[in-house]
Image (tube, rainbow, N blue to C red):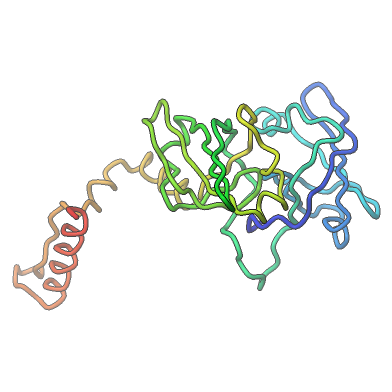
Length: 242
């Protein structure tokens, strides 16, 4: 698991391509300073396993599915990448829970610079649209960010993030221009909710604020617990209407 707080800007130094896989070597002295064989390192949001290392570089295998879903499909020596070591138990969770299991890629649509920030608008694949919400969390190239806005429909959706100077300087996001692709990982909680609703479509109706709840006991009397439930239901309904 990662937190989306980038520790180091690394550089791809070697790429060995196979028929349906790839072996990549990345320079990242901090990332390998305490790494061992089999450890996980996030490379621009993609969780990779260390299979070889020296004092400054590590090597990892990239399988076909990862190549199909990520920007590593066209990686070449010289590319800068965001690096983060796996979180340790007891670490501060400075970003949000990031697995390194990306959902796919998004395309930078536009940039808007302010006095000390940059708003980046990105495309939103129809499959990812239900998983991205305003003020929710998202990882872009491994960077933990807050969604500042969303728009469009399911077929033409987009979302925006706002980047501070530190993020622009300390990650590869400062280099991104319209047309560039980036790796995205949606929030793990949103994924699980989507999966549960797909398997149990009646869940949405059961937990809707408009769904009546039996506030009485088995005998039909209005118990204290039932009264509390009715009050909670009324509160949910009022919030939904507001």
